[in-house]
Amino acid sequence: MEGIKPEANDKLKMDGIKKELRNPSKATHQDYFGKTISYICIAFVGLLVLSILYFITTRGLATFTQDHVSLWAFLSGSNWNPGMLDSHGNPEIGALPMIVTSFSVTVLAALVATPFAIGVALFMTEISPRRGTKFLQPVIELLVGIPSVVYGFIGLSVIVPLIRHAFGGTGFGILAGTIVLFVMVLPTITSLSIDSIRSVPMYYRSASLALGATRWQTIHKVVLRAATPGILTAIIFGMARAFGEALAVQMVIGNATLMPHGLLTPSSTLTSQLTTGIGNTTMGTLPNNALWSLALILLLMSLVFNIIVRIIGKRGSLK
Amino acid sequence: MKKRSFFSAIVALSAMGVLLAGCGSNSASSSKKSSSSSNVKITAVGSTALQPLVEQAASNYQKDNSKVNISVQGGGSGTGLSQVQQGAVTIGNSDIFAEQQTGIKAKELVDHKVAVVGMTPVVNKGVGVKNLTMSQLKNIFTGKVTNWKQVGGKNLKINVVNRVSGSGTRATFEGAVLEGAKAIKTQEQDSNGTVQKIVSSTPGTISYLAFSYVNSKIEAPSINGVKPDDQNVENNKWKIWSYEHMYTKGQPNAATKKFLNYMDSGKVQNSLVQKLGYISIHDMKVQKNASGAVTTK
Image 1 (cartoon, rainbow over the protein chains, first blue to last red):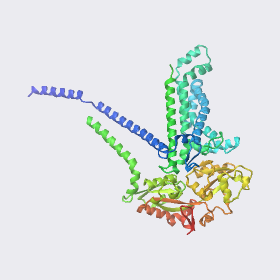
Image 2 (cartoon, helix red, strand yellow):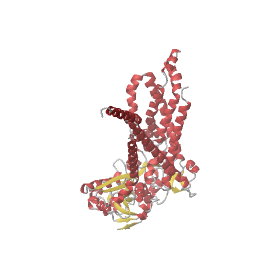
Image 3 (cartoon, helix red, strand yellow):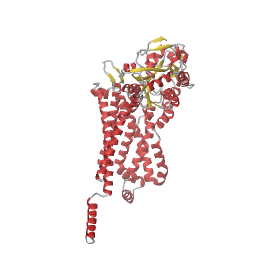
């Protein structure tokens, strides 16, 4: 008995070690567990995105497949009144005024905001990093945090009357929309520009200064040149935000489905038309489908913005 | 041990499945279940013009009936009508008759009229007009008249602010004023509050509002000499008014019916309705049908 025991003990021990080595440990299980959870989350998000895409696409295309509106009439027509028929018996769903207005406010807002954004970014990175970060960083973060309805309300009670006094008319229109969006996209463009300027290697600056260039020459010829792809990306992101902004724009643009004749006449963007119209239409009817088609345009545009960002990122990276 | 992780994955997946399925079916089944379970849930969705009244009435009602849970949401008359038709909500609130909305099968819905809202054209204070005729009003909103001078006011360009097409307020106004003519394309706003603000601050502006939104900063002209007030609505001297409807799909179940009866009772009609600027359905001396024909009660 006494002779066998240690042997058996040893065997048992060996088996135990063998088992421990061959079977997955606790850590391995944690690994599996973590992996499963993250896969489930990914699947869930993927499903969500796919179903959103599917929903908007089917609804948006219904205007053309179910109601037999020609795509060309939709994109080039300038009469928007989905509940009504025109003199030829076709529904009036020309989305061109909204498309033009959306692009106008977006491009104008980005054009106005970019110089300011780059100026602030340069100040915070090149000219006075310490003070810049201390004072301007909170300001930019504050601008991001203000809800869009507040911007819209300020636009409605301050900017619209100001424009009316300065230029006449009603004050509603693309100009008011541009000014509101300018403030809204400024922080986006600024913070992304800061990142891209910061990522320009220090030795570029040192080399430039060592060659006898002034600070301005260094900023102008070296830093900005190297940061250009990043800044372009920043501008595109700003434009994407401006393009999709609904509430603030809706409050100051006037929401008239008219072709804009200038910066001061009331007009309507894709988003403002969506927010004002969706509650008053019935699912499955033409007026509702037409709104989904506008949503589809918005979706496609954000896709285009994303692709542009990708292309800039690939082509423009430092070599 | 491997089994366990597999098992947990299955649990997680099925939980998610239940969640997902819940999202889809919860709203649809709740309205049916509500009559049998002890805790009754009533959802009323739709018209933002009617929302404050229903919200107030619902919270008063729930104080006495703790087992009933009423949730009131906005979304617009169109949303209310289409949601109640789909059976997704118990009550669909609407400013307009179901017959007036395209894509709604009005026969499936049962109408419960709970209040009346009078609407009036409103103008900026500086236009110099205290009275308009109905045809002048029509000409302004169809774009035939473009200066206040032409209707007896100051030499000032008329700026028309319309409501969003498809909104209940616009449907009512156009039904009473335009008689089928097409309104000019112009600014559109989707809330009473915004319209009020724009009219009070923009010279030469005309729009229209529910009576409760008229304040001292804007002018509500009389039409053909008739002043916009509750008495004139009640005997139809003032033509621009509409019912506030609460639609149910088919006849309402017991709990919903009780709440709708409460909405119609003196408790709501004689206090809350008037306090919030609506006109009681019981005070009306006339009635209007979906096609706009008015008869005496």
